[in-house]
Length: 249
Figure 1 (cartoon, rainbow, N blue to C red):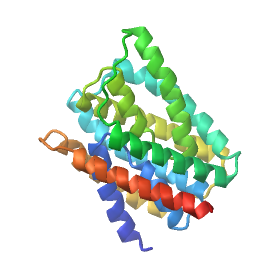
Figure 2 (cartoon, rainbow, N blue to C red; figure 1 turned 180 degrees about the vertical axis):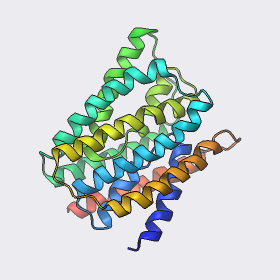
Figure 3 (spheres, rainbow, N blue to C red; figure 1 turned 45 degrees about the vertical axis):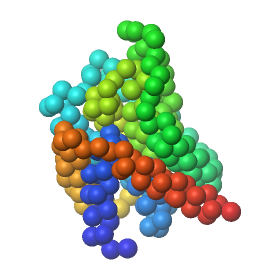
Figure 4 (cartoon, helix red, strand yellow; figure 1 turned 90 degrees about the horizontal axis):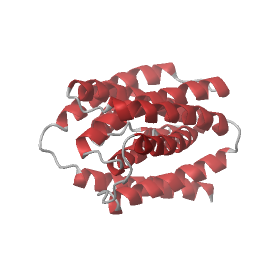
């Protein structure tokens, strides 16, 4: 596949995912894999673009005071550690297991968006207990995210909603957390693996992801409903999960 279509796809993914508080790795990983990259090369490339997208979006969210740093830093700290663990484990297990796990997570993520997008439950604890519970879950999310290359925002956003955030603050805080989680996973994969990354693809898609995230992060301040976009995204995830699983048969 030519580089230009990949750049366009990266831009569009960044627009959509920054609007939803995500980074796009959940799409980038299978995309790079289908383009012929080894899975353990596709994952760090996806995490890199995920980091660029969320970092770009975070610049806007920080200016608009949508990032709750008091909660973000504890969750970010544990997710970073989890991401390092996940990148280590990814280089120690068979590729078929990673693909199977990725398929299952995509399926779960799609069901979460389709049927559990409105979080009705809120934790009753307050203060440090609530933050500690969130940090523990962030560690698990960080480990899984780095292990299969999905970024983690798909699960960090609902976690923040459960902790009592409104949607816009959850999106902004999630983007900030996932920036460092993805960076940690990216560094971990480079350190524990033997991958050779395509720097040309990363450079141009990185620029496209940064620009797309700037567009998407500003769109959230307009009265734009993302329900239909989320549902369409969930259906895409189901198709990707099915194709990945079918490829193992």
